Length: 479
Ligand code: FAD
Image (cartoon, rainbow, N blue to C red; front, side, top):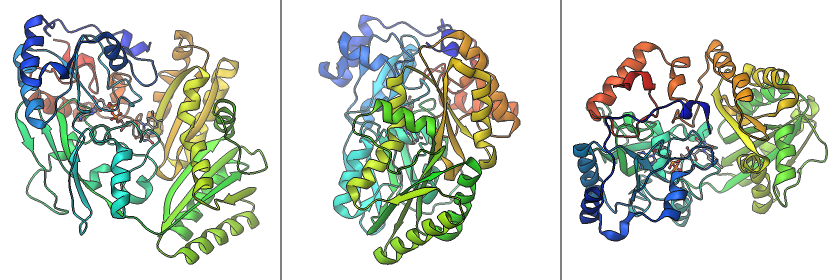
């Protein structure tokens, strides 16, 4: 597995599960929702990348906030460590146990509770799958303010807990802006389930839970501001010779397509090759092979005008020599085939072998320098790829190799973290810290900030049972 996870030791203060515990959980949840079945536990103990693996003997499936609260109270009193789990699509090892932590999966809490067609506010349980919410909203003429490749499996509670970014952030902002309130349980239920767009009555505690990766409480309900579905969506797939052109196109797109721009994603040719080689039925939409590809999506309300605008933009970029080739999707099927390329990279990487994933925020002009530097550094040892949410300054730096080995890790880390820190970037743009980067937090946060985070953790989770070994450095909790 990973270098950082294998260096951690189980905290002796945590109790070990015994048969009395199991009986108590069965009393609270009923027999069926206390899972001891080995096959199901094997899946729940293993992360999406098959890189991190725990050895939990128990998974709990609560059906409502009250049950979550009761099991957490029990775990707290017994000092049993727990790991909250949603769709288990996280990419930093946060959603699986490190040792024998009890898995609490909220997948059965999957009901839409209310939808207000005037305000667009959706209230739902945390275990709702993102794609199901999107389908529900579609029937009402609305869309979710976030969209990501893992939508078929990830939960809205997991999205909130990781503050997932994804493909629409450039347009609708982060979940800190669109999640109105969250109910979290830590034993005491913190009901912050409001539906108001504005509410300045003191500290806004929900923000602590957005992006806290299950370390402060379990999110059981979410209220989120959704957006009306607009009638005209267009998608261009374009090819560029060099990274400087990509940057210039981003600047131009913001200027010329600003009010309709809804996504700006990029991938390099190594990523394109990988997708073409590992996914069935995918082909390069443009005829030429180039070093970079960009997807530009626009969303607006005027079909003729929006399309003409995008066409004119493309033409102008071709004339200026910023773009070497480009196509606009003719229908929704072609658009999905374009998206399949960008969204399929994670899956293709998984099929290609071992993958070392880094999710960095950097100044846009620096983004591709780290890819080139790392390529030089690793030479023939691995295939280095760069892609991501260019419009948000977010690079997914991925290194694909035959296996996970210490030599390669030694060449990549701390090099990548130091590089990022030196350029004042973030070592986690959107995936979180999980177990992978808990000890690396100081590359992006000052000791003073981390100390306050640790005090907040102590206040909300005095015994440290909530997702231990994740998010905060282990040195702070060595007792
Ligand atoms: P999990 O993986 O189950 O959990 C993630 C973390 O949240 C863990 O620390 C867990 O303990 C905690 N958690 C989960 N549910 C709860 C809860 N109810 N209460 C408290 N804590 C909880 N991420 C992005 O940001 N942008 C992307 O574009 C993106 N694309 C992806 C594409 C693919 C193909 C894959 C596999 C992943 C992608 N991700 C992306 C990462 C991942 O999908 C997101 O982080 C997602 O939000 C995780 O949701 P989940 O329900 O699977 O959570």
